[in-house]
Amino acid sequence: MRLWTDPPHRSPRPTRTFVSLTGPPSNIGDALIRRAQLEWARGTSDELVVYVGDAPDAWLAQVGAPEDATVLRSKQSVRRWLWMLATSPRRPVLVFEAGEVPLDRGNTLRELVFLAETLMVRLKRGVVVRPPRGIRAPTNPAVWLHARAAQLSQFALWRDAASARTVGGNRIVPDIGFAAGVRPGNPWEDRDELIVSLRGTRPHPGTVWIDAIRTTAEAEGLRIRTVVQVREDEERARKLAEQLGGVFEAWGDTDAVVQEEQLRERYAGARLVISDRMHVLILAALSGAVPVELVPHPTRKIAEAFATVGLRDISVDAASHDANSMVGLLRTQLGRAAEVRLRVRQAEQRLAATEAEVRATIKAARA
Image (cartoon, rainbow, N blue to C red; front, top):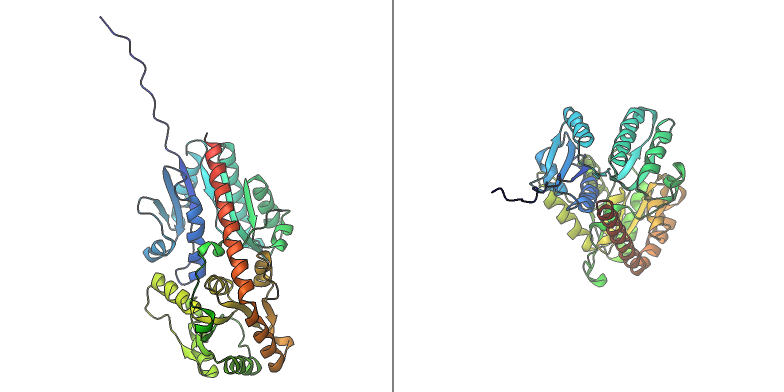
């Protein structure tokens, strides 16, 4: 006699999360924000698919890619990325890159591809996340395409109001670098350094600037140190140390993960960090140092991103000041330590709440 049995249950097809994690291992700031966006995606699906472009193995360690992730490398793997996205089970998750987004005419084709990816995921009733971003060189039709893709995404986040306005966005949150973790650092009275880290590709800040930094350090009893957070800035740091009478700390052959940790320890012992690199200033602020952009003719990027977290007047145009007024401005900034600590803690909390919202949205989409 044949007994009736229930039909076997079909196992659901495994879910997938796609994350783009390209970037140069020579830039610790890029690794910082890629690692933070990966944290938003980690554990949201059965399978994690990451695209890292031409990045070497060292980059995977920098961003903290899990060993069980499916890693797609080189531009030749873009087709596989698109195929996996198109054939993925329903309700996939797609996380774009945080940071700066160039939207000049040369990026029109790329934006068209990104719009197509967004459409694919939404048609599969999935979730699209665009972490905090800032727009550079906005030009149509790239801007129009980007705006359409952002409108189709459940999360299109902007790190400054100007970028949001460019594409009609309305969600402004702190740069995702502020999620790297607040550290108490050394007590204020034990901090004895003024740290400088400038871009090597911009003009030298000039002798008046040199005089102002040296005078400020002497007046505050601080030792000057130049550090390197982006490899291409190393020679600039070396020369500035000579001119400032400070200590030069090379990157050299140090592993990038170790270099990042050493930099954070340096920022933890500094009262003031001067840079035109945004993520130098963010890491400095997270470690309790006062961040200042003091260079001739600064761009609006740093000022606008820090304004989002409530820290205004962080950026100063050195070309508009003589040495005495720069010294006065820097000494005034040193009085903002408590404000910096408060604002970065609030920024960290806002990003944590945003991540929780992203995860809740993904969970609801798959319920």
